[in-house]
Length: 294
Length: 329
Image 1 (cartoon, each protein chain N blue to C red):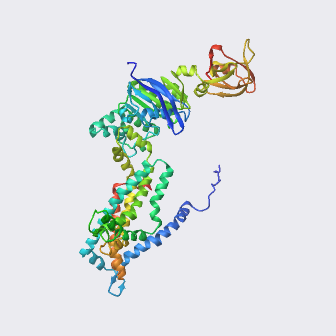
Image 2: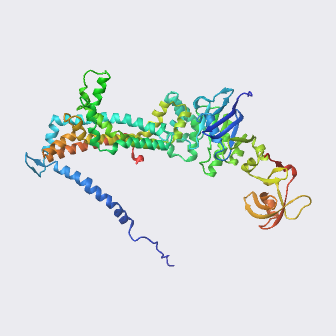
Image 3: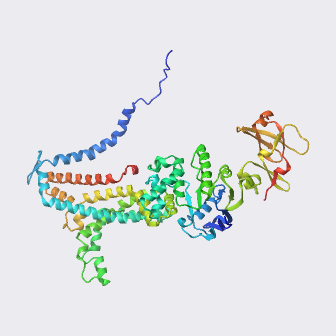
């Protein structure tokens, strides 16, 4: 008896082929704009350089110089210090803002309105927002003159501008929203009846925060933390402006090398920075699974 | 049991701005009662429950529990526990930790609270699932966990907000039996909000039918079903035909009417058969009467098939006068 010969209709391309075709555009973009530049940086990091030229080679001179110089460690340490302090401050402020928006603002309209209010500073460029701190914090700036007028201090505070304080203040100002957005997003997904259930089970407000809200917000906290830490560790312009070129971080190290056309050395530093950041993120991901959030 | 050991609602009112969700209701629910708040959505039954639970502030009126005014107490100090419609299990905690949550809040040490939680899980037949996360459980299992979590606080009243609505029909009937068994064994009051009259009739010792923020009727299920006080109750509880007589409306149970193929002696209502619905043990015959509109008559299957009627056939309806209840306007 002949088997039924009716074949199922298809669009002509095999599933495997159409799958490859569909992922091709993104693959090309990632290849040319992410993978290729990184590979180039890694390759150039092994090149050699003299005062006036760079030449292709495969040598470890750049890394040897970097890893044996005490300056490198100092600068990396300083970068990590900025990252940790900025992270802690943005987390504290960002969590508080997100908590307020998600749980205390009852109406959706107000939530959206206040959320947009948070984004208004982002309508101007990073650098303008940064520079606008200078007249405020300067020796004869608004902050100092106000404090003197109020009789709180006699002498202008020197540490307000061109200091670690100024650098971290700018970081916090620039990057807190990167903490607010993902945390707010996870908080909005928390079923409100869970908070009622906690209340019904006798939890105080603080117990609800530590036992229900923080554990459920962890993925958002983690995403925000990754944003802030990578942004702060890769930054160079904020440190340069706000410290008046008196403080250093890895970004400035790289930027100085580039200024001196020492590309191989800049690349080697960049590779080590990249590995440090990846290591930090790997450690963070070890603690919280953010995949369910994506 | 003293007369005072009961939950009392006194002129309990809930307003949201200008709208009144619950309007000055009075009700007494003796301890150890399975009470059902029954009504369509928006009738105020959930608001009432949430006010009893302490999750909704009371606009005016009082809630007394064993003569103690609990109107303004926080939920955990009222002796009530709430089981939420969505179960509201903490997704990041294991089943045992979910059940032990209230003990943790009280500062009970880990070993004691976990042991107690496992006992409660035993009670709801969930002992083997203690270490799983809520997402790894089926709806029925999640519900049992929610039940255990509510019961661990040793409440004297368990409040259930549409507990069965998320379950499939088969499971719904099984959980229904289970809820009733638990209530009998524990001897505490259950207050159960539902929009399903089947559920209310099957479970309740005391049914409270609500509509538009007021109580339409309350009493034992048999009374409410047999003698609905108003047209709303008769229609909502189902199984009744409403007849508009000259001196007000009457309700007659659909299974108390009989269909006759030939005109009988005495009074009978002429009608035409419009539809026949076979339900297994019963057959629902929809008829259209010129004086009363569309009516339903439930006939036992044996009786129906002994003398079946067909669509379009002219028939006569008859019922005993004592089976007709007049309804309040």
